[in-house]
Image 1 (cartoon, one colour):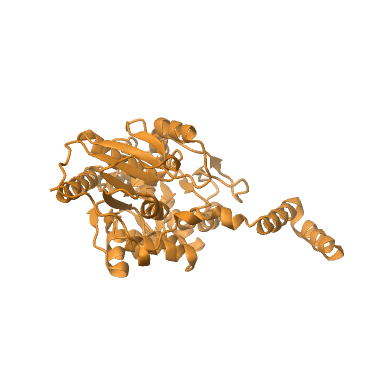
Image 2: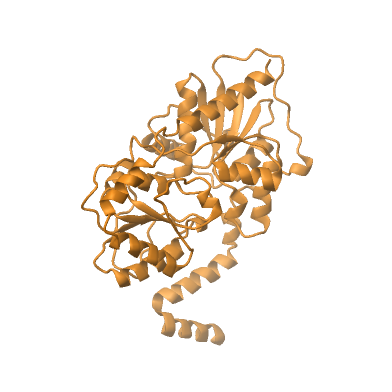
Length: 402
């Protein structure tokens, strides 16, 4: 007891109340085994490729013109880029007459009505029904897993014959240190689902690491929303923060922005997303923004941070479309799907990233570079990717039913 009081006294003296509270939370989380609650699957939903036996898709039965397609997903939150890309594919399937259903997998048992309301509010352009997968999987012609967790659910819970797909937006083992989660995520690529990969990076890694050949759905950018409205009067930098997603490099970005602010205190720093409350530099916290608000923000900014340690963030090309130059940590993974010549690549260190930001705000040709950046964004939006998904699902279901 005396030892514990001594430790507490030392922490309080050196780090204050916040440091002591942080220590207490850490100790309590260890005693309560919070890490087990952070694991994104229920134990009974873990599948194993080495003894997986899935029913074959139905054969020699007539294939309806309108397909029933279920998308298994974790509960979406407003602003989620991964869910937005998924819902673009749902929209494409609905536009050609197919019926889609969102099958929610909530490991924590949240209310379906709340998740359904979030979907209707944030993605009003889809009409898919919303079902809690805990209530069972209704009859479907095709089921689509959308993450490594939901791939396990598709393998462990879907026992009726149908076509099975895996919509892969990133190489998800890289989300983790090499360990249990890494291995369980990697194993999903061996489940035998027909795979659709978003971007060349994912397709290349699936082929080289696992030996899986995927349909390639090319990256797109919603230029109906993100586009150039202003060339001049740009100042400052922006940063989309997501501290709980390691691959988005929030800690590194904060260190870089602190150095940038030291060199350029006159330049505004605007942050949005999930912003920590103790940033060490002057900033404007914009919270969570709608896409149209983001386009306005980008059209007022010179540069932005679009950190990405796996597949490229959608934020990078959305910034480019509005004339903001994204600074991205240099990586062959991120480079694979961002061909725009105006993107700024920097070594992943605070000083190198700060150097890049300084160069951009000090440049004499800010307006010209904004125009060049926007002109270099692919103009076909997400249509090629949508066409790939529609063709892959239709062809597979009809091939099995022929």
